[in-house]
Length: 226
Ligand code: NI
Ligand code: MN
Image (cartoon, rainbow, N blue to C red; front, top):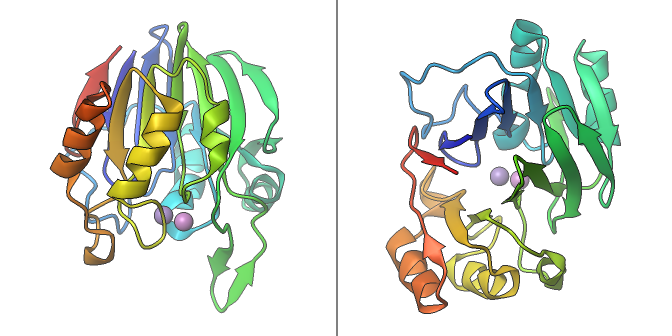
């Protein structure tokens, strides 16, 4: 299976058992970090951590194009159902076994309002995703601040953690989180998309390596095969 970082918090998990493609937080249109020439495969499932535009992104358009199923919290799913998307609502703490693997929604300390025109709609609780596919545990934290909830995560093979600060953890806090999670590999996300979330990923890598954790910095469009 291939884990491809597509800039900001976009993660494509492709060729799961050679069959399934799953995308998390598909912020493509308007994402300055999205690799322009990237050829997206047919998307089977779209996972959305929360309602903010830089995460909900192109969900509706992708759903229509690929007839994908959206996995998100109950409120976001029902909002998307009204837009014509196929949905599988879940909620924080819930587990479900999909054809591609096991999914659990984990807590995230953040907001989830959906901005639509001149209104802000209630988007439920934000979340992270813990996904078990092909025997590997992949954790995408979503947007979150530092929380002791990280201590509950066990046996993580690859963790995708936000490090950009301002809206989410900065490098310093992400390193505290890393100490609690102790994944085999960590990949920093949600930084340098805009100046307000500028971060020094090399400093994060050095800190991770001091903790004995392998840090892989992926440029948008680059993949990790596990
Ligand atoms: Ni957000
Ligand atoms: Mn965000």
